[in-house]
Image (cartoon, rainbow, N blue to C red; front, side, top):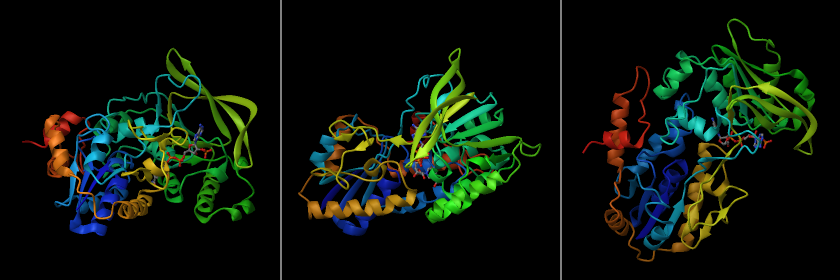
Length: 436
Ligand code: NAP
């Protein structure tokens, strides 16, 4: 019997559990441990609430979670409640699938001003993550600035631009929907320190900006390289740049039927936040040019008005005591997933915050191949019996998958009309909803 602990129940965690079941069947016991009482990580609290088709992948994880081979142990924080060393003594392999829940820091002067947020916090707010549900961003100003040219920046800009009606069928949490309903934001600027050929946005997500009811994208044609230069781009990026060209052909000013603008400001590197009595008033930006793929400052600066700023410049993994960490890369120090004997990582915790949800599938299957090579048929460790003993000894209140199903039923029952669920946004309500 092989005893496997997976820390984190997001896509990386459940694809890894799925791979373990495929590889060993009944000859393994797998515990998926999460610090929250609810599973699925980024699927629940990262993927945008209006992207329900992407969220539907959780049904696949559910198939893995049901049964005795794989257990869900929610509401247990590894590193605080139970150490990695404890787990390593009990399991043949401990696989960290903890993602990258922390924002990469926006290291500019004034970044501590009020109404300046990182995307983990802002996305967590509209997705009901218990750590960020009480963020209460002020949406009463006219100018929002979003830093970064990746898909998270697109998510944030789109959510800020949508009408209440456009959230039909989404599971955006009520506190965010109410706040967005009262929003007075009219100008959303997406700042990129490099140019159109260096964006990280994918075509499907970029194309959604054309479908918005009351908002339209704006690109200054002068920022675009000659069309012939697109030929060298890989096909996905070429499609994205073609969309930017379409945006550049749209009317340059807001119109009565599209009063909200989403303007792309390329070659613009954030330098400082200008505050006004504690709150953000503007952002100072330096014009750049791209040399050998890198943004180089030109010395020319300007200010953009900003009442709200969301920095979407990437994420980093949270360090855990006793686990070697690569500070520069913001993830666990690992060799293709191996950290220390019996200790592995997978997904964003291994490779950093890149790729789509599906990228985690081969990652999960890959790490199970490594574990299989390393542990053979297992070393007669105590596995989940030992964990249960520890949990009892420390008086931890575990949430099981069956408990989660009750929580989910309550969320479905509380949904507003047309919505799939109304999420509980704090840990106490989640735990209370499982009943007795
Ligand atoms: P990302 O794709 O890596 O984009 C980060 C952006 O931030 C880049 O444009 C980067 O510019 C910029 N940036 C980094 N540091 C900066 C700084 N100091 N100043 C200014 N700009 C800076 O990251 P992400 O948007 O957080 O997305 C993470 C992953 O999740 C990606 O793989 C993404 O595709 C995925 N995702 C997918 C979906 C979807 O499929 N619908 C939705 C959301 C997220 P440089 O290139 O110049 O560094």
